[in-house]
Image 1 (tube, chains in turn brown, red, purple, yellow):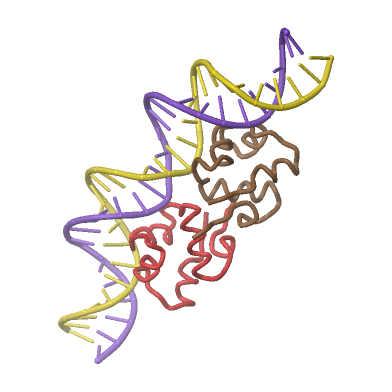
Image 2 (cartoon, rainbow over the protein chains, first blue to last red; image 1 turned 45 degrees about the horizontal axis):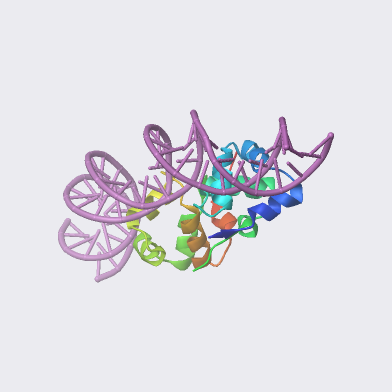
Length: 64
Length: 64
DNA sequence: TCGCTATGTGAAGTATACATTACATTTTGT
DNA sequence: ACAAAATGTAATGTATACTTCACATAGCGA
């Protein structure tokens, strides 16, 4: 599972910390997902898509 | 988190068992998700969307 | 250079997605 | 009505998403 979170963050010019607060998760969680350490829950993915005003598929890419 | 899995299943006229095999999860997992006992992982949601040829948002509805 | 802000990371614990087994109930076809 | 298929569900165990605390490194402005 790949993601373009860093790019979406850059578009809005916000920090991992800021995004974390918006998503109501920790900064470490955002960092871990961004770096591919694990995948987000579907709830978090939905929250992110809503925040960035796009679809889950615009942020996350499921391969195979 | 609501979902219209049962409807999508009905469209293809397949059983929970059949969908489970396609998704490579157990029948109980499909049943639990369909009945709202818990949410799918994002990977499973992606697999379902791919199988039903729709978007995750077409199957799952995130509220609140 | 100094200090601050952002990011990366490790360890240990909690919550939840999913498996397995097993059985009960409902639905469907004949 | 009867059997078989489909669905519901409980108990117990495992994997992983996420938290908290703590500290280390990177980058950037003054």
